[in-house]
Length: 198
Image 1 (cartoon, helix red, strand yellow):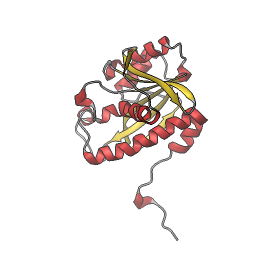
Image 2 (spheres, helix red, strand yellow):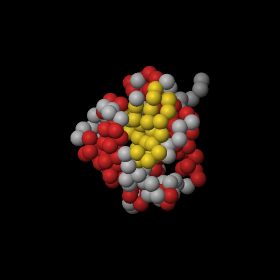
Image 3 (cartoon, rainbow, N blue to C red):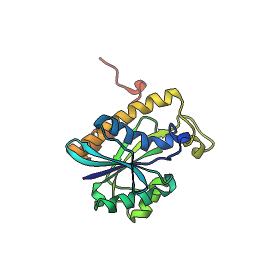
Image 4 (cartoon, rainbow, N blue to C red):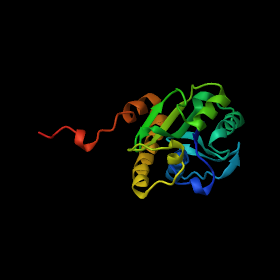
């Protein structure tokens, strides 16, 4: 069994903010695979089902971002899962909007939710999928940027990225994290950088 957790904030006002891309990624997987993520469990809303032939628990911690680790630790304990069974998904302001990155371990960067999980588990050694939400222009406050609702154009890019994230999670479960990293960790090329057709 695998535990797939998306990070976010539970209040409706945060629903369409960049900081809730982790929740949106869980919703994408739930919608694809007919999993209802609504059972209160381990300070999260959780749902059980199958993705790519694997039994999974999808979860959205309801503790608010900065205490996400409490929920993740409880869920791992409840289901007697190991760190290798965890996949954590969160928004990443250091990556351009529309870009995903998959890694088997690593630091939290400046993300307080990821810091909370690392603190609660006492290790950085768990798989993660980061969802780029970085601005294409300088912002005075990164905190304000990730906590404001996304504009229509941003939501369209995010929807495409969430579809790609869903594909990537399916590949992680069916072919392993290395295969998914090889496919999805490529740098996105803008149209102006694409080689000319000869």
